[in-house]
Length: 195
Image (cartoon, rainbow, N blue to C red; front, side):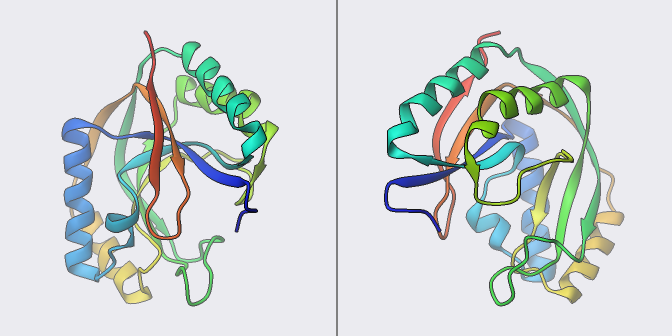
């Protein structure tokens, strides 16, 4: 996927504390009901903040400095996550590799989150190639099942999610760079906002 001197990074904010545990429990229950475990095995619960970037080794230091500049401008803020949704025709699906079925928790957009997304784009993601299509219409969410979710599992999972009430307020307190790998994403660096 990448040239020898390149690495791919996602830009996310991980859930922490009770919110992390509650989302992990939902993911575990979906695995038990549907057999889908890619989400459990490859990612920790998170909100994507920017497009996945491709960085060559000669641009690594520059990217990390931009990352630090972005974090230095930020203050912690709260977002609401509630309700569930899904899609049965995900554009990122790859036949035989990733199924088109995805389930997620909705993240309620607010001005601070949109500004963080825009700042991330202007300081980081707009300066680099991406390995997926660039995020144009930012629709924040927390994925709870994807990749190996079948059509039947999607229906079962959606029925389960409709049967539960879910509401959490979470703090966006940091940004993490997550290095792409074939099997499991690897956290490269997490920097907390100073304020």
